[in-house]
Length: 200
Image (cartoon, rainbow, N blue to C red; front, top):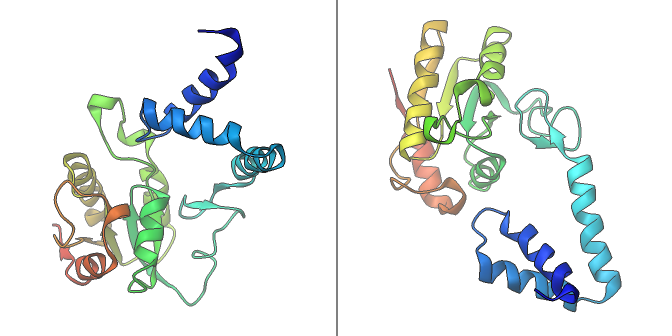
């Protein structure tokens, strides 16, 4: 590798760290960045730094937020007795687009996956249990993705919360097996929420 191409290689390697970005896509991103006017490139870099330094987790639901409590948790007009449990912040945005759900959320930041070394203690399950014990939550909708890991995580959580007197429901199979909530259309998500069922 020529020394004068090292910055491009480094930038390419950085883009490859992003989920779903392969070598060719990373190279295209890197070349797009160096083709930008300097002011635009600096603005891009500043946006990354600003997002990384100012975005944190909501102290209630663990969703991303610029404040200690996110706008959804801080909204008194939402139904705080119904909590929708999702894998990541992208799923929150997907469900919000349906305008069907008026409860609140809890973000796990992953799923249980022994093969990848992700055990229950590495998720925000303890935070969810603390919320249930310290509030009047009556239903938890388990809206993890319909994958093997998502199903296993939903079942694990259901077994923990049902003994606490909380109803555990699962979103209906309007979401295709192996699918991802982020890429599911709004109509399908709406039907899945409407057709949720009791897990235990």
